[in-house]
Length: 256
Image 1: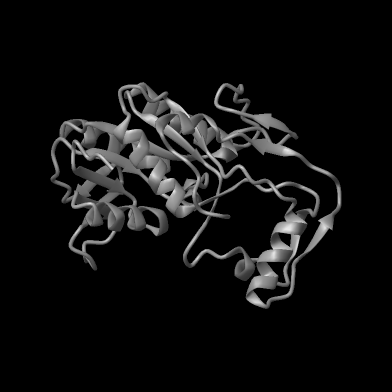
Image 2: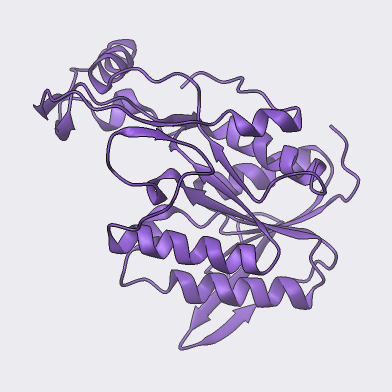
């Protein structure tokens, strides 16, 4: 991997962001990853906290790449996600960032069946979709790029564990759109490496799209757990196409 600018700030060093920090350190990048606390577990930890409209931080890397990996659960209506993102964009600009990548979600697309790609029209049907879209627009307006991530799997996030024996309020015949944590990390580095020619928005979605019934049954079987049940058996094919990013010499290498 070519790392022509080896500094990175990860806004939100949670499950995905922390793994990204570890990968960047392995590649001998200079790394700072933020969390809300002033107490730091790792040497790359830095505080970034927005309270009552004021930012408290100790981020110091100049001329670095920035990646916002704040997890989707922080994008609830009552959160200050958009304000935090805008504060991050402002700080990144003041530190002369090389480029800003937002880890968004394929949840920004309509819930209706169909095939969706980066050119699909976004028609926000929920408050969450509106917030995701507004966040994307803020980053794009600032000259950044957006990765729309499918459902994330990987270490400590095993489908065969978190759905075992549960009744899921969805159809057994809906197809899944998922991606492995390591593929997302690789996609981020691919965009950075090819920044001048990369397009503004990419979907990051594994090309395999089994039904929920088949997918979760197999994952639970692997863990020796009971399979989930579903409230419906209605066929649903909402497929997110993640092929475009392959133009950046990227390939999906990790099974979902």
